[in-house]
Image 1 (cartoon, rainbow, N blue to C red):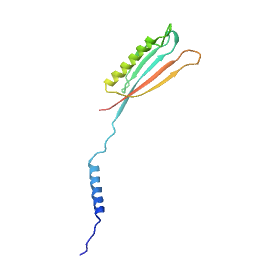
Image 2: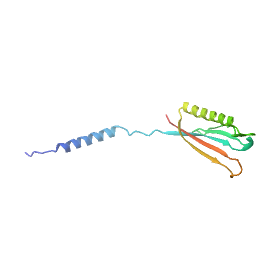
Image 3: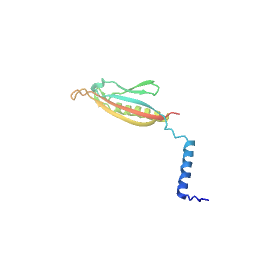
Image 4: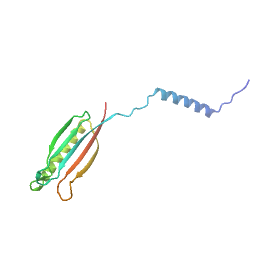
Length: 135
């Protein structure tokens, strides 16, 4: 009768491979969570004399939109720090409301626009992005 000599390391490697194949077959691969995004945008007017328009616009994932008035940076007498403070309060309130609804702050993109260097006019715009996992 012929004796078969098996290398114990090869046997162990083969058993480990079979075990790994069985476990990976039975365990489904983890799925990455599905995220949904929303944004709100603030447009704050930089037009002397209080003639500009400022707004906060929200677009939800289902496409519904809302608009809220913000105050202009300038009034008839120049920069109105009270208006800037009130806008800060409104924007912070909006962020806190969204976070309390389960939205996670993702990022903010900021920009300004001025028609030309001598006009003293323009806008200050921020886009606030939020996300959450679909249930």
